[in-house]
Structure formats: C-alpha cells, structure tokens
Image 1 (cartoon, rainbow, N blue to C red):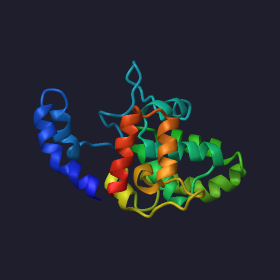
Image 2 (image 1 turned 45 degrees about the vertical axis):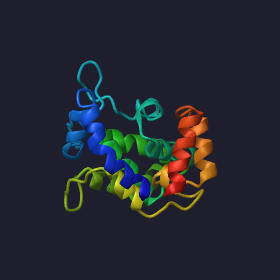
Image 3 (image 1 turned 45 degrees about the horizontal axis):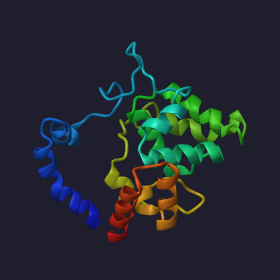
Image 4 (image 1 turned 30 degrees about the horizontal axis):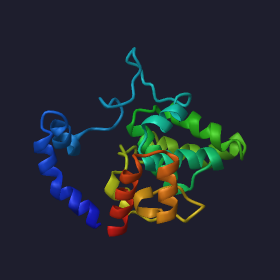
Length: 199
C-alpha cells in the first residue's frame, strides 16, 4: 500500500535522526528471533516465562498490537476462532514465548465454553501441537509478520477476527475502535484515518 511504501522511504531518516534512541532497534528488527526462548519473550522478575494462560488477558490489553488484541477480544467473546485467526494468534503467542502447554490450556479454557473437552481435543489440540513443532513434520513455524497479515485473506466481517484492523476494517469501525481504545489524541486518530484512506 502507498502508506507502507511511504513509511519504508522514511525509515532510513528516522533511524539516523533517532540513532541513539531507537536506531539500533530499527536497524536490527528484520533479524530478530521471536521463537521459543527469544530474548524478547515476556518474562517476570525471576526470569520465568510470564506469558501464560493466567496472564494473557492482562498482557493482551496492555502489550499486544491491535491485530492481536482484536483476535484476543474475538476469542473471549465467541469462545472460538476460525482457522486463520487460530494460526495468526497461536503463532503470535508462541513467538511471544507462551509454552505449548499454556497455549493448549488457554485455548481449551475458552473453546470448552461452547464445546466438550473431547470435541476440543479431537478438532483443535493437534493443530496447537503442530504449531509448536510437536506433530506432523515437526517444523518450526514463526509468527506472521505485518506484511503477511496485511496482504493475507481479509476476514469475513462479524465472523472472523484475523487480519490487520488498519487495513481490513472499514473507516467507521476503525475510527470507533481507535476512539474506544483511546489510541492517541484526536489529531493522531485523524492522521491514522487519513493514511488509511490513502491506501
């Protein structure tokens, strides 16, 4: 999209202008590892993994990007996610350091509000183990990057929660969401909406 191309064009300038503050982060972002044991995994004061089934609700509200927050809200509201949503959110949780057992517990706790444990185990548990490389070809899967989310299949309105809210939400829903979440001030939200309209 035009806005992404514009952002890519000013990347070098921002990296140089803010070299002492965020330059090193920006310059190394494309090579950051986000898998198990990643240095950016959410840790508590004693160095243990803090992203668990018990902590994910609080961390979703304060620390997750908007796309993951919306998947989390959709999961909590509907007690399930469609396939693309499970992949996008599950890989994100894995990349943020959530162990497979906690991932399984978190999804099972939500899904079994509308189905039995047997149905969950039969229809969903294998995919969670597969995501963590414990089933199938035992591959290591990484979280989706923004480009994959932005250019992936758009979600069906009201049914699916995956995708990028900035790209896939209509103007009215995005504006209402930004206002509800108090993202930036009015001028910031207006700028975000202007960039969205530019494409």
